[in-house]
Image (cartoon, rainbow, N blue to C red; front, side, top):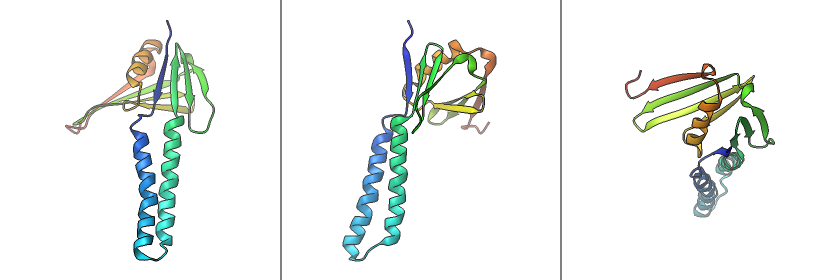
Length: 152
């Protein structure tokens, strides 16, 4: 009974991008109407902010890591999905940081020179991490624990 586990960027990231885009259109428009002058510097600045927000929005919608049995699939922003087997993993660094907000986990999976990073804020992380521990040998996983509440 293999089920496909998907890890994606949290859905709460999308409204943040839309608000940023809306503000970067509204602020220069309001400033131009209020002053009656063209604000070229502001147009350039907010055009750059809009471009970055659009790229972040595209990245958040396209990025996906899947786990189907022992096969990993990775789709980044503009590339097609690439698959590899769990036996090809050369190392895993599992960072667990305890902060005042709770436990923050980050898993970096290495396959040769390529790396995939999955964070606990992503949708599907819990199921992914449980399955990862079951299919990958323990000697490949390096746990790094840190407590930033006590600065240790």
